[in-house]
Each structure stands twice: as C-alpha cells, then as structure tokens.
Image (cartoon, rainbow, N blue to C red; front, side, top):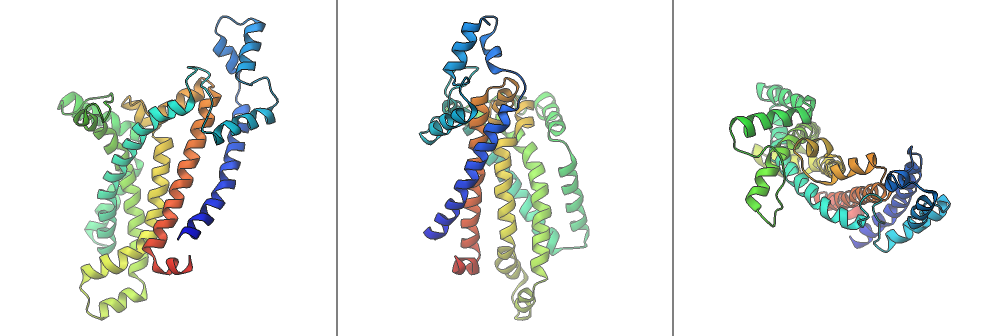
Amino acid sequence: MLSFIARRLALAIPTLVLVSLFTFSLQKLLPGDPVLALAGEERSPETLAMLRHKYHLDDPAPVQYLHWIGGVLHGDLGVSLKTEQPVTQMIGQKLPITVELAVLAMGIALLIGIPAGVIAAVRKGTATDLAANVVALAGISVPSFWLGVLMILLFAVKLHWLPASGFAPLWEDPLQNLRTLLMPSLVIGAALSASLMRHTRGAMLAVLRADYIRTARAKGLLSPAVILKHAFRNALVPIVTLVTLLFGELIGGAVLTEQVFTIPGFGKMIVDAVFTRDYAVVQGVVLCVACAFVGLNLLADVLYVLINPRMRASS
C-alpha cells in the first residue's frame, strides 16, 4: 500500500509544477497593473517604483516565478497586494468555512442521492424509477442562486426559521453555525444529490446485469444481500470518483452560493482577488485548490484499493 501511495505522489508532483507554471503565466495576461490600484492617488514614479520593487514586480517573469515558488516550498504564499496580509493566513481563515459548507452539502447529497440511485436501479422501469429521474433532472436544471433565493423567502422571510444570511463560527456558537449553513448546504446538496443519484443508478444497472449477480441469485441469496453486499460494493468505484471530484469542485467553486447567503468563504475570496488583480492571492488560491484535487484523487485511489480486492492484489 505504501509503495502504491508513493507512486501516486510521484505522479502528482509534475502535475503541481505544471499547475503552478500555468497559474503564474495566466495571471500575467490579466489586463491592468495592480500597482496602480494599490498606489491609489499617490501615483508618483517614486511610489510606483517602490511598490514594484517591494513585491518583486520589477524583476523578469522567470525570476518572479522562482522567487514565488521558492517561498511556496517554504510555506510562504506571498503577501496580498490589497490588504498586505499573508496569503497563507488569509487561506487559513477562509478555507475552513468553505470546507465545513462542503462537508455538510456532501453529507446531504450522500444521504439522498445514493439511496435514491440504488432504489431507482433496482426498480428500473417502474413509477419509482421515473419519479427519481424526474426529481434528479429538476435538481440538476434548477440554478443554485435561484433556489437559494426561494429558500431565503420561505424559511427566513415567511417562516422565520433560519437566518437569511451571515455566518457564525463553529467554535463560538455551534447551533447558530448550523443554522447559518443549513440553507446553503441544502442548496448545494440538492444539485449534488441529483448527480449522485443518476451516476449511482447507472453504475448499479451495469453491475446488476453482470453474470456473478445472476449466479448469486441462482444460489438462492436474498435480494437485499445481493444488492448491498455484491452489487453496491462493486458499483462504488465510479461513485467514489464522482464524490471526490464534486468535493474538490465545492472547495473552489461554491462562489454563487456564498454570495447569495453572504458567507465569507473561500469562493468569495477568489472572486475578490480576481477583481482587484491581487496576484499573490490568486496564485495561492489556485495552487491550494490544485493541491486539494491531487489529495482527493489520491484518497480516491486508496479507496479503490480498499473497496476492490482485485485492485488490492495488483497494487
């Protein structure tokens, strides 16, 4: 197992290097000069030169990259051009909020999507299967921001059950933290559960047609045992892939939901950094999201080996 993980990590290193090169090169193509925005009205040549020297913006691009990547290897992602706050500190403040939101949303999606997909596959062609597919299609088609606004109108404005916006840290008020994150988690979880349901149904249908499932049924095994022990376990591999990818997308892509519910998370920080041309924050955020995807893919590979004995033998 350790050698398997080491091989996967060896493949991940070139990926992260290419991501860092691509990110650094792409942000150089953005229009505008961040130093002009940072200097404000004090745009004298001396001030501009001082700021460019301070943030190494007067060096050639290869030198800037080497300076930045050298800091990254030492845990230093640079300093925000806008707030002059360390990027590592900013990510440490915002990332836990989005991770908590992603965990809650994924938990809701797993509780709804996987059982619905299994039931729809087992009852293929029935009214239950049709209803599950219709609900899943609606969940995928409804825009998250529109559903968020409707939930605010219902649960916050009409019923006064939940707050319309805002955020309370978990360590300060756990109950209020849950109340502020419940609606955005439901909004995100609805779309995720729809995707999970359809993929689970497809994976289960493929497995249920396999020869060993027919053999297990011919031996007289009860249907629940065949479905849960034999079919569902072998259908987990594509489901694990989807879950890890969706969780990675949530970390870097929960922008609209965070904007609607005014949650000061990772996604909002990404948008603000792009609009203000805060290069250091953009680079740090993209690299952090890339590391998250690499880590989640590594986790998926390990889960494959644990789930499938044949992969365990080959690794």
